[in-house]
Amino acid sequence: MSLLLERLSHRPVRRDQVDITLLAGLAALGFLGSFFIYSATRQRLIMGGYNPQYYFQRQFIFVVIGIVAMCLISFIDYRKLESIATPVYIIGVLSLMGVFVLGQSALGAQRWFNLGFVQVQPSEFTVLAIILSVSTFCARRSDGLRMYDVARLLVMAVAPVGLIVLQPDLGTSIIIVLVVAGMMVIAGVPPRFLTFLAVVGSIGLAGAIYFDVLQKYQIARFTSFLNQNSTNANIQTLLYEVANAKSAIGNGGLFGAGAFRGMQTVLGYVPEQKTDFIFTAVGEQFGLVGALVLITLLGLVGWRMWVIGRRARDTMGRVLCIGVFIFFAFSCFQNIGMTMGIMPVTGIPLPFISYGGSAVLVFYLAGGAVLSVSRRGGGA
Image (tube, rainbow, N blue to C red):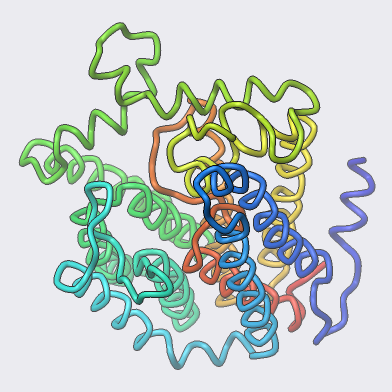
């Protein structure tokens, strides 16, 4: 197996030849996600007297739109995206500010613009804007990043992170921090700078907690997964979602209860199952085998993103792909991990699988950018 992977990762690729494995994997994830959403919601919609295909139809439309957008982006030379990096970043920050004025509140957070037919979460698009801006910034400094450049990158990241924390949305904030840190490593930021940044970040986090920028309930929700055996009633209340998620996955056994079946899924015991906890529906209905198939496909997509970034011909392509890879990989790990109780509960969706039009579009646009790099020699 290791020899096969080694040979696959060093296959010669012509310029202007898209990475078929990544393209097919991204398309397959979108269609699988639509089906999983259908299987998780069909029975409850029928019992409620609603159209059983309501969520499926909406998700499927966005998947198709996303795939078309991804293909169009892949035909554009990613280096031409440099000219729109600054305007896209500014629009992203302004949209984060605007959500406090025109945004819609739900579940204790104000993160969305309600456009009637769809809710748009600007923080998700902002992650993509930051990836494009940072990769462009690094590409313009062929001599490497100096301390002054690192400071500018920090300012670039701190503004949106601060606005996102205030929504509050700790999950997306963490993603941006990890993405920017990983991109700076690939861009060649000296380790001593990264150590300094880690210290400053730790001090900033402690200050946010001390001055109540982060509310106590947010901190408790974020850390409750570390105390799953606690008898404290408040902690157990916070872990209600996790307990039901673990139960649903455990009920699936090896092969699962089958599509449209499973007590936890059919009766709606898992809150937010079609969005944040969609993996529990996969585990209960299709068992360990189905979950492993999905994880393998997610892993294949992530691996191709990594390979394309590693073999990119220039700094912008390399940093861009690694930024998208971190965004994708951490989202997968965090989302699946929280359903199994090994990661904190956050609002991070499972890429291409969780219900949500804006998230699907963001990940397909990001995939299109990576495919653009692969068309221009960044593949294997």
